[in-house]
Figure 1 (cartoon, rainbow, N blue to C red):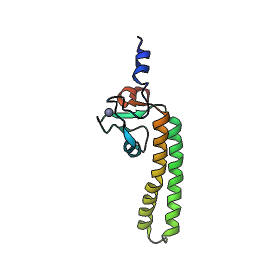
Figure 2: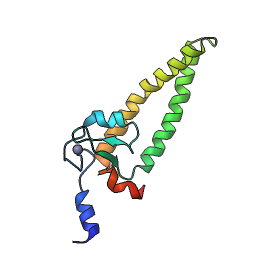
Figure 3: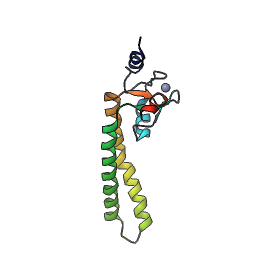
Figure 4: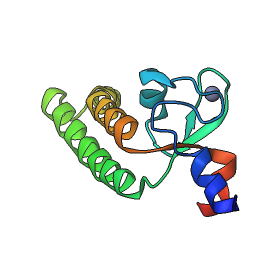
Length: 126
Ligand SMILES: [Zn+2]
């Protein structure tokens, strides 16, 4: 068996199960990760990442920028100009609230379309 075949066999896993211990990493891990490149298995603590997430990451960056602007405008509408701190606080709060559905959607997409791998094995490839 060649190295390439071994590699493929090792990672014919899926986006749900940890390639190290085989347990389902669950929804919580996906949401906590926010960024698909950094994930941790809640069962064995291995650093994991999804392979081939360049498109997903790019989309998430665009969405994040949009959410920052949206959150800023929502709090600007609600809070008068002189209450700067309150505005900043509300902006951060709205950011987090708006990010939850994005995280859920991204998690769902990654779980069903992408493959989980150990971070230490994929580090060299970026
Ligand atoms: Zn694990």
